[in-house]
Image (tube, helix red, strand yellow):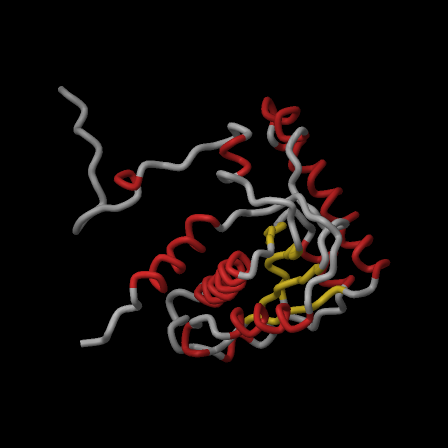
Length: 219
């Protein structure tokens, strides 16, 4: 039987999970290159369907490109606000990204040529996206362990980002990641403290054997 981690090792894993936050407030200090390398390697060691390793990571070091990406996100932020109807003003008060403040900006994309990979994707082609999400989560947890904040930005026009990064046909951006030093981590998810949403009870998300059926309507 496989041996578990010792108590302190196990506690460290769970601490990273429970203290990980989607950060939007950063200080502009640079990220140590050795630490960045460890985080990228952690992402690259994520599980992937059929071992296809579909993630492609672009580090943004050109200030003009960072500004252009931020403009794309700002355009989508305004469009999202308009689509929210009654919650527009509430949404506009939220800070949704830290792209101009963070020490590192990364764009995570799905690779081109994914249709060649059939193993595990014949009936679930979206498993390539699930694999990229695993890579992002690996990096997120590792960043928390390193004392760095990370935020996932998904407010952007896909084609605009593809064009800015000159991605090949078939490649698709999934996330803009803000990475860097923070003054402190949020005590709870920011959208929870801002009362945008709250965490569901575990019992609402875990079933046994079958999906629970709604009570039949009385005759």
